Amino acid sequence: MARLFFEAVSKHFDQAVAVEDLNLEVEDGELLVLLGPSGCGKTTALRMVAGLEDATSGSIWIGDRIVNDVEPKDRDVAMVFQSYALYPHMTVAKNIEFPLRQRGVEPSQRQRMVRETAETLGLSSLLDRRPGQLSGGQRQRVALARAIVRSPQAFLMDEPLSNLDATLRTQTRADIVTLQQRLGTTTLYVTHDQVEAMTMGHRIAVMNAGVLQQVARPQEIYEWPANVFVAGFIGNPGMNLLAGEVGGDGARALRMEAGALAIPEQMLLSPGAKVVAGFRPETVAIDPDGGVGASVSIVELLGSEVHVVATVGSSRVVVRQELSQPRPAIGAAIRLRIDERAVHFFDAATGERIAGPGGTASKEVRW
Image (tube, rainbow, N blue to C red):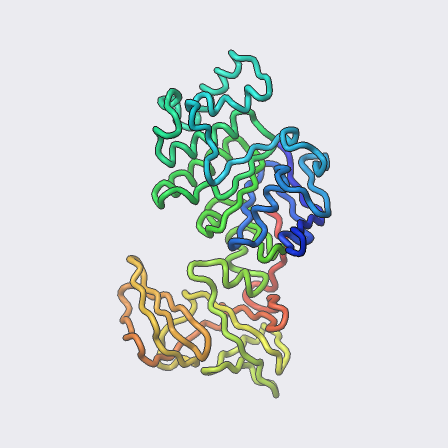
């Protein structure tokens, strides 16, 4: 096992910047999730570790060596792809065995390792089948078996669950977490799915437009987002964001398009500062005495809860309600009561978090 480390790594495709000045460590035995929207650079970062893309600048470490000029086959990492990448003409056993054959492992040892790995992943009864005879979940388990059979220093997983249906995703997600905990193999896992990130990762590294935004444990990244992007991206739905200006002359209020929000005494904001107030859907309620006016645009019934989507000036606010609470009619004028103790404040110009519950979040939090 080994740590992975990006040291000031950038990747440019002609004039396009895919990854810019990435400094990130995946610690020995850690499962770190690289999370972000499509095109943010997360898969490019993963491919640079695997040697499938060359870094434009910076150093990539696997263990105690820089691997920028090391051939992919010599990096001792195993990659699991979104598309499974199985050989259709080979049986399950032959697919699992393939990397061992490539390494020249003796035949009897290969067979033993294939049997043991297949048993670990519940594939023992499928060894004689071909990929076309398997379900999507079974094919993904074969891809995982092929990755783990040779005990690499690190696993690299590129959206491995995106081709599975919801039920299979849940099961396979649990399988991967259990497997990683059992093996203790350093794992870099790429996804755009927040549920995968929040439930699987020891830490989450959020990227946007090729730039690392924040690294923290899942709960910390949810409770203390480092900037406006992370606040809006993390959570389902994301944090509500309303722009405003801090009142002057000692006023402890944020003036917004459709009302005002009290600013707690412990949050030190400069009078006249332009900020963005962020608050989670569970910290706002419909209340006739609330300080912010809104208009209901959508009411979504989600089984165990209701999301009321309202328009506040030119912005959108989601209110999470329990099923027992009265639901407003679409188009109704309502007032919103925001729990000021749960509000985060971000600099309107830079997007960085400047105040909020628990102080200021750092971009790097060790686990």
